[in-house]
Length: 423
Image (cartoon, rainbow, N blue to C red; front, side, top):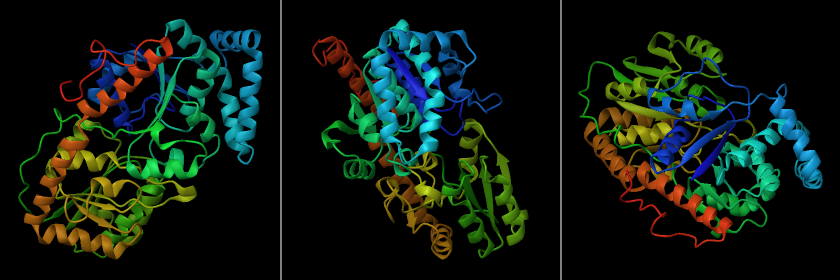
């Protein structure tokens, strides 16, 4: 099976869940080609486990490329009517969001070149990793080529805007989302999208790499770990304010970078906790995995950020629980489906400094209960977030719609993958 996967940016350190899916699809027999829409991110940290995917990338310039203009010319010459109707539908869908329309139109020449490449390559299926620009690109390519496409929906890609979602998701072969919360949200906010067309396939963890760690002996310091992008919806300022009113033996490690970095470092100094925070910057997964071993608790204090931006289910929570480490997280979107309060971790209201401090104190004061919750979290990961199961579920959906497009039976014993036996 030839699978074209569309991402917004590449490589992107924080999107480990996308990279792991691609590797799993390859293990299941797919020939993968990666299309990225924004300019290539030179200098981005690439995890060791993800290096094989670098060979699957199709590089295409934004505008100044012979293939870009050849793809545009081909679309105008052979499918001008379809292209005109598609642009008209975009103008209608984005009528209240002219900036988003302008960005989508600016990407159009590159998308047309990708459409020509996907068709020439013989792509069987196209998968958009998010419902924003990747889904727009998949929708356009699908309209021009007839290649079936699907879309994964995670968090801010559906929460911040609903513009054009009825077309992009409505015309998809299927829609994958990562939580029950998201499925309910989509059926309420996207007109005409029937629940039966939405598949809940959770993000998967490679449990071969994430083994339960031995219990960490308590030391003189209480070590809190945050892993993620330094962005407003991550709630790192809430964590810094919690540290400012917490006992002085609490320490915080922050692994990640992003647009909020300078502001957060200034805030830490202003709160008087600068010496108790270690800023590690962008880190490889291999370094993060080692950090789990030295952490007493992993915190994910997410909030509802500007424009409705928030989390789906933070990857770090799944990784931490897979490693058998206690977690404290905010009660936002799909997080309570993984972190069941008092069972597999502790939940706090988003933005509530006092509640966050109290939850962290509970982890420190009752290590036996913290360990029991972490063990329950590991069992939940094994049952519902195992990559070999989640990836096989997606892959079978790709196969199903390839067969439908070819007019063959939807699944056959020779092609369907057993999620329980795949590796």
